[in-house]
Length: 606
Image (cartoon, rainbow, N blue to C red; front, side, top):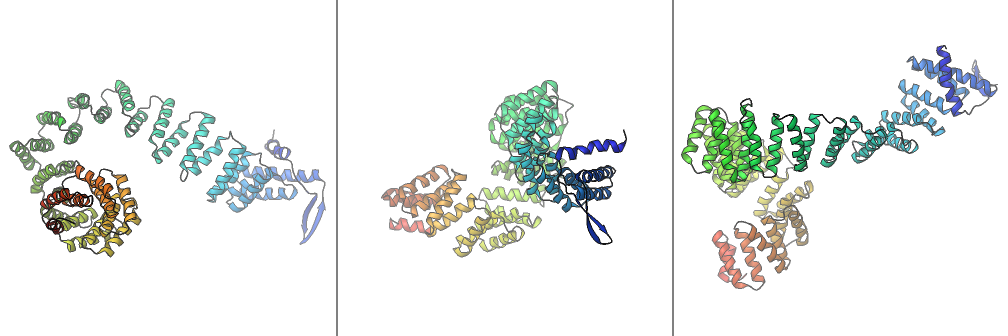
């Protein structure tokens, strides 16, 4: 059978299945004079079919210009949805997007029973970056052709950036049609990750493992996600299953220890990691990481210190590595064994005075765990060898500031600023310390410098507002607080500080109450927030309620002259004069500079 005959049978169905709407009047032009030639319908269809077949041959050869001409001629003799569709494809391949769109829309309008017409129309809209129109076409197509997976797939790709939940729905529909399929499930993992839907990620990875149950990387990914979801028992089961096959896999052993740590099963974790620690083939860096893991936990839980010390003593016997000596020195400091600590630190300064990273890591570890005194002691050792290191000066300054050693803190933070003058956190920390030293003008200078670098840093704006508020320059402080709330309306510290400022002036009290409630929603046990709410209630005349919140602040917090003074005022308003005087006396002992408290004591009343 010849090529032409094959094509004749292939394209004949377009006309016979779809039908046609034809005219027996054909336009003819001879030297500019248009005439109408009347032909019988059968002959018109024959001419149209011949041009249609020729057009398809050209199309298959990649000659889209000639194909378009043949299809255009065919349309003069006959009009069918199939012809419009084929002509539209040729126009699309010839980069005639507008023409292709017009023809495809006409094809769909004439016949909604052909899935490929909708497919082409959606593709043209997509190429023309008309995403919404493409979506509408595909949504209609899924209604008409509910078992066509191609439409669901294309819809999912359109949805996945802006409507990931709808994309997930489409991919799930595909799976319901074709069953488990790797690429589709992988797309679901990506989308659930994008939505931070850890449970969705886990269930999808489990479905992937049904397809490839021996995929170790996939199983490790499952373990990681189970850990993130705090589904520790399931994670442990997965780790144990893999350890049966790969008993020397260090990553798995560490994961098992991590899980056991999460469940406070320290002894079990140590037993698991002993395999690594006792293995001579395992490199020192890996063993050190395990040791650091225990050391970090020991800062929180002192019962782990003996185990931690045992690990590092064992490592110390196997090597003279200076990083081990630093940790042993830190442990000796905690035990108040200064002579041993000095011995270890001396070794480090003599053998590794060029390396600063371990000192920084150790100091930061103590600081992050609010062990400020320990961080100070470590970093004072480090500063002797590294007086010009930015990180050491910065963390040391912060550690001192947290202990209210503000003058010492300012010295190191000033050095940190000189070493890194464009770091916003350093500028802000130095400014805050200057504020504590009553050097407000200098503090304002450095805060404004920080804001030139990062204009929308809410913490910097809030600190600056706090200083202006203390100076009673309320117009500036209020403006800064309002600006901070525009940037981050739910920031608890900003809401609390602004609310307290309003309450001290007795203005906008209902608004202030809403703001401090927002802060307490974020941190219900924060003593400053509790005191602020109590003081607002006091200003509103709701003394019994005020006492509840301020009393709770006193119970939970460290002794504060301001908070105890507030409680004294509340007790006085409730008629408990003797209790009030007792509290005022306690407050003045905590801060003898509070003249307003002294005046109340002298008068014996508010």
